Image 1 (cartoon, rainbow, N blue to C red):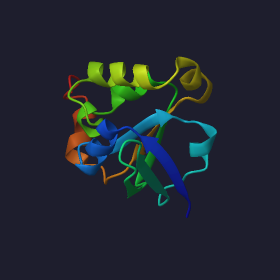
Image 2: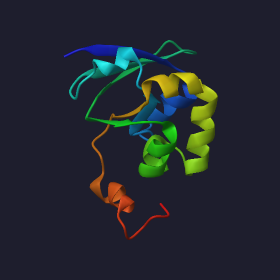
Image 3: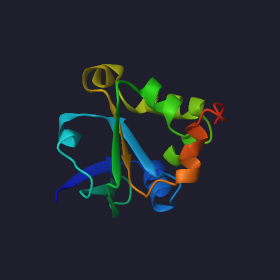
Length: 126
């Protein structure tokens, strides 16, 4: 088992701490490519210096953020709408990095099957 330290701003840290962010979304950079289910992510709050640790419960890979945003419920990423997810990710990560490495979704809490079922053919608006 390995541990990856990730520095985050208080906004993100608090969403993880409060349970609103169940999926951590990032470019699939080389540092993350060695991570496996069961490994640990240590989030370091850049403002306060506090840390919290979450186990990787699942990993999903995508060619880009647009595909990821289209397929995953925004609420599990900690936002209300897909547009909000898109705007935040665009501000946080350089487009070149995503084009080079793709995108990953790190499930840091057990996926809620009912929430994920919004992806079914019966509900395309979620």
